Image 1 (tube, rainbow, N blue to C red):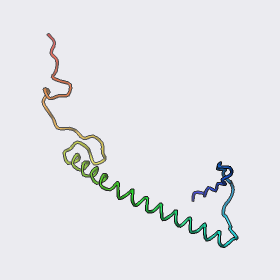
Image 2 (image 1 turned 120 degrees about the vertical axis):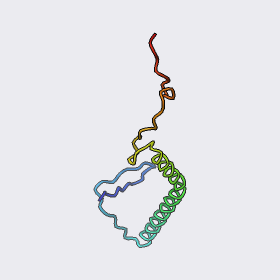
Image 3 (image 1 turned 60 degrees about the horizontal axis):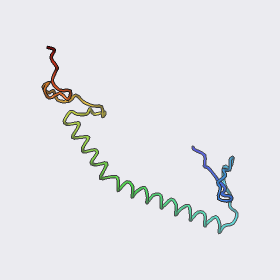
Image 4 (image 1 turned 180 degrees about the horizontal axis):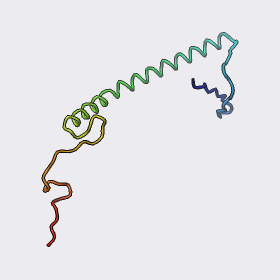
Length: 102
């Protein structure tokens, strides 16, 4: 389990507080206010992540369809490595035809 980091804000400068394992708040009103703020933050983070996932979904689906098409054409293997392209005549080579000596 990763330890929780606690910081104190003094004069607009954050200073870490090392060695704290828990925090006890004796003022019930402050404890409730803190719990409510934590709950609000958690709900905001969940909403943000859901919105991000929903916005990214169409792009990721298109990437998946493109990869599937490339895989079916033999351009990539199942693991994403480049596949062997279709054979083509030398005159269609990206390097041009073979040069002949004279």
